[in-house]
Length: 303
Image (cartoon, rainbow, N blue to C red; front, side, top):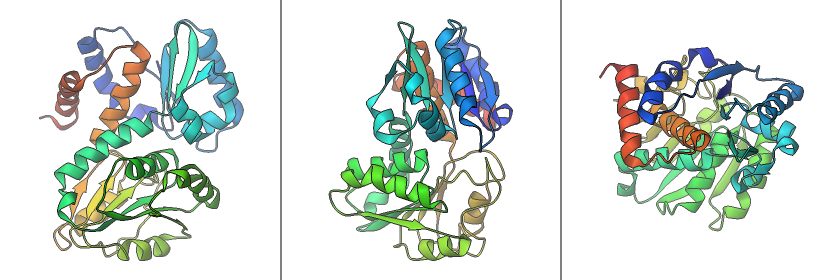
């Protein structure tokens, strides 16, 4: 099984995977493939062609490169799941009867992770809040879709921002058809000052998500260290490793602003277990997920 990313050797999955293999009763091996953020489309096509021809490669998890994987290689797959076509990305590659299939699993995994955070942070106790997603890449769009289609009635506005005009336009095209209550707002931000202004305009108790990849795949943070978070807001950093500047800034204001802060570890677990389930064609129900999550937590946090 391939793990396609930017810095795959640094991922804690390399320590977790051997333990999970035993629990799942499978002999799958994990092979990391690093591609630069500006990787040539032929790199993606070569990988897909290799997977298509080989009987030994069962599938792949794609992180960071989900959109370029789709754009460069969609014609090479035997089948694309509806989610992949709708959101123009491929985050999971697997085989059924030797047919190569691409799927956008973020729409499943981000919903599961966000629902946990929503419940734990008691967002339903607020009468009206905003949800602000920093980053209009695949994972940010997937969360936008989850918020629009999952009945979060207390959310007044769903704001998506990005420093790329193309990604903002793409997110608007993908999500607008689901926006039946006119909640969506899109901003092209030029620097952290722009982002800080958006964050500071949010209602008390709002949800702020860093889906930019900054602080992990690339340095920096979408906000500055001087930002004023809305009181009682819920902060979610998609990532669990790296410099995590965004998370550091939130922790620095945690007490003053009464913040509830979550990192991306549970999202990471949902992402990996969902893809592994597809690749080995084995259901991972809630009971088995809890076992795998406990094992991963013990490895990462020694608890």
